[in-house]
Image (cartoon, rainbow, N blue to C red; front, side, top):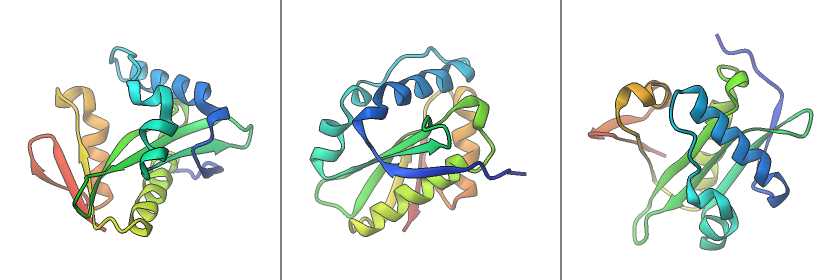
Length: 151
């Protein structure tokens, strides 16, 4: 069962950039994946915020990044993709991922997004957490490696 961990979910702030990058790399390493950085995370402002999309951080009581998530809208539709939902490995299963997902979904609704989509990685065995996490939050598969939820 999840033990709630005290975090506050905030809009992305550049002062947490390096800490966020560390969390993403540590999360990938803990899953046995090569800890490569997604290029969009080097400049969250340009790749998300300046485009009118969103990116959020979970900040713990020690003012450290516990997790992150973003979304990008699909032009000309009422849809958006959730991106980069990562939680610090030592803090998983404490409700942080759920809190981040709830925050990004609320922001998408406020921005007029009607359908939230996720693109899941391959092979499935390396992305097992994502394949288990999203259905628990109402997402349903609609194509190989893709899930969606009506908001």
